[in-house]
Every structure is written in C-alpha cells, then in structure tokens.
Length: 56
Image 1 (cartoon, rainbow, N blue to C red):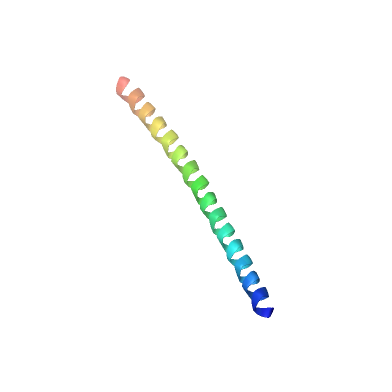
Image 2: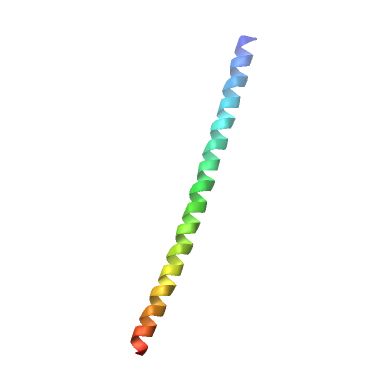
C-alpha cells in the first residue's frame, strides 16, 4: 500500500512539474512575441525617420 501511495505522489509531482514547465514556456513565448512586436514598431519608426530625412 505504501508503494502505491509513493507512486501516486511521484506521478502527481511529475504532473505538477510538467504544468509548471509548460506555464514557463507560455510566459517566455508571450514575452518573445511582445519583444518582436516592439522591434517591428521600432524598425518601422526608423524607416519612417529615414524616409523623412531623405525627402528633406
């Protein structure tokens, strides 16, 4: 009986670790998407500034 409880506890802990890891991956992905959008906006602003400078 004790071995079965230990196995259940181990499986439960394994599930929790997997959940935590997938949550960390989701957070990293969201941060990466935010940084990508920020970089795209900065690139667009730089291109606009360059176009304005060339036109003058």
